[in-house]
Amino acid sequence: MPGPTDDYFVYERWFNERHGALTLPVDCIEAFDPVLRFTNQYTWEVEWILIFTDPKSYVRIHELYAKRAGLYLSRRIRFSYHYGPLIKTLASGLPEWEAADALFVRIDNSNRPPHLHHETDAKDHIPQSRVSGLTLDQVDLFDFVKAALRHRKSGKPIAVELGYAII
Amino acid sequence: MPINKVCLSSNDVEEMIDGFERKYGMSSPEFFGSEEAKQRVPEDDAFRWEALIYHRFALKEEYQEVRSEYLAHLGRPTGVVRADRENQELLAA
Image (cartoon, rainbow over all chains, first blue to last red):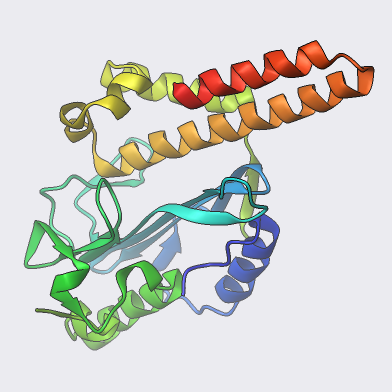
């Protein structure tokens, strides 16, 4: 399940508990501490980048929550979970990705309903109707990260580690 | 390490929005109003830009709420009416 939507205080507790329980491999560095940017308790975003050195690849998590109209509750407006080879970096050293670049998997809801980009064709926006075994808008960001860590260790396809198949 | 919390101010948000507008040579309404313009911006930057617009909206909404409460406290209903009108303009933008 995605993170809690009550407010950023609840989300922050949830994130810190899960993040604290995560063991990262020695070749993994956090480009910066996960950052939670907020403007009020109902509007926040989280960005988190893990960089692996051998072979060079990275995971980038970004999600945005904003207030539900008329309610004291938020909803996830946008999300993007990316795992792929490190091809380009910005001057800051952070990974940069463009639509044509190779990846292992990316799940996001950019400009359309939640969809998946699979490693065989990064440009293909695969809708939920063509994905079995995984509900795209219900993927837990920590499950995504753990699947990436397993993928690096096991060498099995990322689809196996994340538990989906393309129909 | 626990998550690093950053409280964005109005200045922070406006500066970052301005940065994207200069980087891609278009205003925020131009960017969000055109599919073609969106295609010119990498998805990760588009996400950051969109997030800033949500932050801007949240800040303006908070400002209006505080202002309305303040004016109500002063017993000046005309101020509240004006705040509502400004809010509608924001929603229409």
